[in-house]
Length: 195
Length: 305
Image (tube, rainbow over all chains, first blue to last red; front, side, top):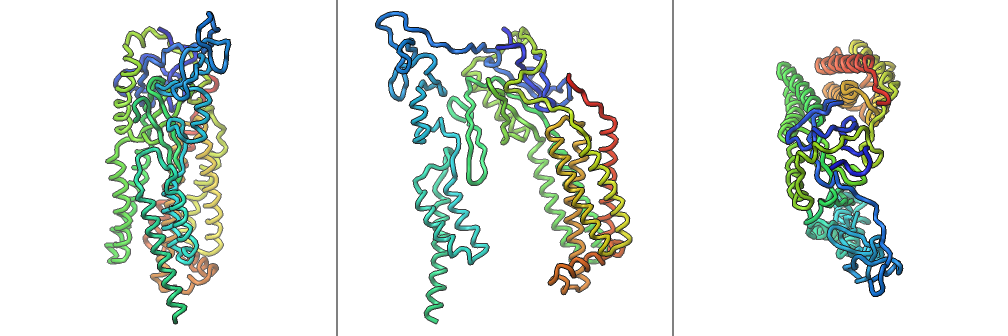
């Protein structure tokens, strides 16, 4: 078994960037880099030596064989698990263990419905909480930011936040603090008018 | 950790970015032990020792206000030091994929990185199978680095920034000794300009050494100069401010120029803890620039290999 692809693949030392010899792989203990003497632990797995050949779609060979939805001359090798279309080897996209097609990926990306495709999220709850809390340090600014925080928290209550488990505690805290500030300003206004 | 992938989350308070590393595609994991934790211990230990010395000095001078102040500051540094030691050595963890090598920024402690690696290894072996030592032994070691997906080799860098930094640091050390005996607005202004120049050169040197290949002692001395400049600026500023308050000089606070002139009129030699600070600054700057100069002068960069 050889290192796949060209001879130029190899694990590199993160310190000096030079190739590490195979004798250091999976040694089970810290070893010094032969170049910069930095102490490191290298673990490699079978994928390191896997020979990933470029994919090419096979032509349709016989009548009655399924063809790709996007390439009628190409033989279908799988089915999209989302839309059910037949896909050739070029169109097939494997994400984890799911087989899907480029159209479903694009649709999922736009709609945000596929969590596997989500690469970034905005933390609306943290923004609402910051809007409610931070301007309280400069209290006159809270006249504007408290209603803004309240609006933002309600507006984005159902917006997706982190894909990691997260409660609504930040939204609730933002709404509570904003309401307290709005209440405070209201009392101030009432007492000013009555006096 | 998902069922078939590792999710790396890079977050600040308001945004999160996600990167998925599927177990079937992970080729390798490298954990490199770094000296960042030790440098942090060194700097914080130095500050702790300084705070302890100043606490003792205030204790013997029966100055309870300063005793409390330096003791609180010292406790803060002690907590930092103990916390850093408790978390253990620092490291850099990289995961090798088919087309890239990515750092896992949250795994910057060796103990945590090893624990996560062992957990990931189980999942990877379930997906990919186990690699035997015979399979590794029979592989052909690569003669050079691939251009794709490998951590780039840092080219050797030109040294003008570091030479300038060490020269300015030595000049600053000499200035500290001079200012110790002679205050005055002119010298104070010169000191501010020299300190600003030192800080700028330090930032340039640090940014260059992050991208270039340089000896560890050179990199360390640049960081030490940065630490000394930051700590020294804070200590000198607060020291002078508190001296003025103790002397009952409240009026200068109302006006920037009178504040500057009053602070500049303080002669460090007349105030014991300011003397200690200036002497320590001079010694640290001299040592750091000396170590850096010697390392830089004796360094022969390995070009093209």
